[in-house]
Length: 572
Image (cartoon, rainbow, N blue to C red; front, side, top):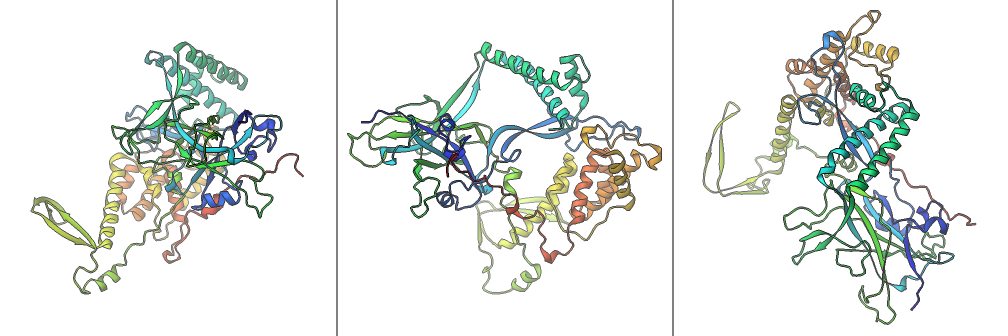
């Protein structure tokens, strides 16, 4: 039996230097992303043709809530300064909510029209980095590991203090370099920076040096506290679909955890330039869902846990006959761990937007014409069996009481259910918005109403602000500030105009009472109102021809970006 060592690495076209052995020896298996439902067939035909991982889109973001600064204009004192009505502690102190990318990979779900493969390449760890034959492998697969940090609770306060200081320093660096915006209460940021530097505005070199110092403190904290990463694998239990996460060896020779098969990528003999020609490449599906749970019913996968993948191959023992894999107890060769990732939530806004859905509501006139057709019940295919029938008493459109009866069986039309469901949604949307102050939710429902127009004076005022002041958060200019008298209006005038414009549009588009909406909106300052008016302008730009079925969100395929094609360096 050959004794030469094997190593599992990324496919050659994902090496820092494509096809250069010295560049690929230390790489880990790669993720490849696809949008087509035929992603496996597409990969086999053209392995490199996969989607790019985009900054901000394909990385996990943290939600930062920073207490919103109070308006500075005299006539706006006491008004609500932000769209989000709570702060990080859940108190009634409005906060500015912003997303901060963490750099960790975000993996979308199948329902988000995104699919992923884990791809690796097998080599002999010898001079020249040759590829062994696939027939020398009797089993290839991958395991999903979860990762979490273990440390004493007593060490948590010190870590929290270091992280808070680090967040403030990195926010200040992003602010100075133009790579981001703190977009919140600058007084909070300035106070923490002063505590660190005793300066109101430290320079960029000072900030960079402090960041390195804080990371050093974090590393020292990890050593002193005994903090360590714990990696666990999913071990099936005695009952099907029930298992548990358990601590496992990094590179075990006895495989006890659940594994998923990987397949060899055979090149198309009709295509001599195929990416797998002369190479031993394996691919497997990255799982994003599972019916498995632990004994307490907790799902195997969730959106809060950090995962990583380890690939393996088993070297075939030539003394064993060929059979169903694994057909022997040959050596297991493990890859390095892939990049860490988290799964996107089921209702992730970016993910769900990848698979738009059209629901055609019933035509009421057509339903009226069909209602009396026979036989009775033909158009009511949904059978509802009620062991105890609940019958509400409705007087003048208001439920006054109810009765519980005996068993009943009802037959209901699907269009009827759809009509009532949308009607209930339209009733409760404004109620939820009013009760909880969640005005930003209105940005997620766009209807094509009769054409709307903003007040011309308000448009002029906004244009003046844009042109003369350059409204950008980084410049520190606020719509809640006092304006020079030469502008011909003040912050209070702008507040009235913004509230009136938003209330008028929302009353038409969402069926809200205009007076009540305007009263509630005037409780807010100009900054959140300007954001809402941006939604109004979006509604205003929608075409009024309903029959045209306008494409509101644009071309889905236009957003797809593919990885550039690579050839081995030095190849002719």
